[in-house]
Amino acid sequence: MSEPSRKPIWSLRSQLLVGILLPVIACIALNMLWSYRASLQALHTAYDRTLLASAKTIGEQLDVDGYDEHARIHALVPYSALEAFEADTHTRLYYRVSSLDGQLISGFDDLPFWRGTIPAQPPYAALVDFYGSTYRDQPVRIAVLLQPVARATGRSMAVIQVAETLQLRHNLALNLLTETLWQNAVLLGLLVLTIMIVVQRVTRAVREVGHAIGQRPHHDFQPLQRNAVPRELQPWIDGMNRAIERLRDLLSHQKRFVRDASHQLRTPLAVLKVQVQSARQGDMPAATALQEIEATVDRATLLANQMLSLAKVEQLRQQPQTGKLTAWDAIVREVALDLAPLIADKLLDFELQADTAIPLCAHEWMLRELVRNLLHNAIRHAPIGSALLVTLTLQADRQHACLRILDEGPGLPEELLQRLYQPFSAGDTRNGSGLGLAICMEIVQALQGSLELHNRYQGPHIIGLQAAACLPVAAVQSAPAQPPGTAAR
Image 1 (spheres, one colour):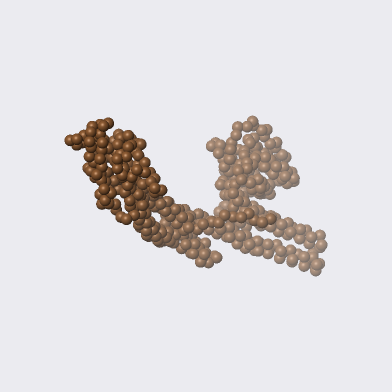
Image 2: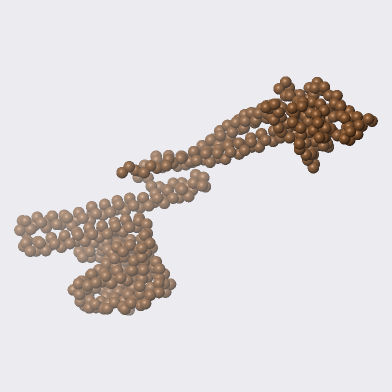
């Protein structure tokens, strides 16, 4: 099956440039549009005044005979009078003088008569209206002026229309737009150059950190310096330092495991080789040789299993919590049942008290290995026929659960208590490898708990040992009390 196509990941510089430049370009485009419309409106206002001046000039050339509906208006306006208001050879002016009812008096008869109304508040101190239209297939701007005409011989009202082609206005607006485009293009170029320089300088710290990490020797696990980078990159540096620390711990554990395995397995293998050679040469009876070989193989097997368990604890420590709840009380009962033959073989007065359901957010294998190692140590060191008490209870804060194992063994010497949880620190190397308590300590540390072993005294005499492993409880739910575990003898 072909791998699913992945979307291309943009560089940080590309994202910054696009994220900054796109809004800037959009703002410049909107500003240009607004500027063009404002320029066009300003041109209309300026040239509308010219149209109004033309209309007033025509109005000054009117004469009238008669009054009101009997009045006859005469227009004495040659077209040459309007040439002064034409801005260039491309601009043409057209006019029409009419009566209020639309009857042509003078001007261009094909110019449509005005049918609009005067605004309630005209822009000038005159009865004037401006509108756009089309005349002779050209867009025009028309000014309409209602001009009272009063003479000694009569009085009336004339409608004066002056139309102007818009080519000049459009050309001027286009010139303004072109000039604005060039100005904004230069401004945009400067902005792009400035932004690229700033982005290049801002992202330099990221490139320098990446280069420093890439140039590091493979054995260098020193944390990165966070003071030399910008404040926004410091959380990233902290995350990298945590990852480096985890990698350093993982490699350190791997090296320690390889070193310990090569060192500890060398001895039983050498002893086994000597025992096999002695059996071949007949230095000892075959039954004795096989018994010693079996004991050596058992010790090597126990050592290998415990070292693999120690490595598995570190592996599980690196894995994220799944959130699955595990019943610790059920695991304690299962492990006690598995070790029942050992308990019976030593005739121990065994009692298990775990009358509360205790769920933990922990891997089942880790809890089982913790209980097995602690209980196996207690069984191995307990005298024949003595008492062995195992209790699993919640603490007073109901946020931690403690597993306590009390035996009547010889206890531990004071010098051993100082290095009790170090690997290969067994008090009796013939019966153990010294990894059991180290495994237990690794497990409780991975589960954010605590482990304590101390001698029990009666007066000045040691009467046994107590091991206590306390772990945080994931959730404490009210449940009916289960019947306590029956004592095994």
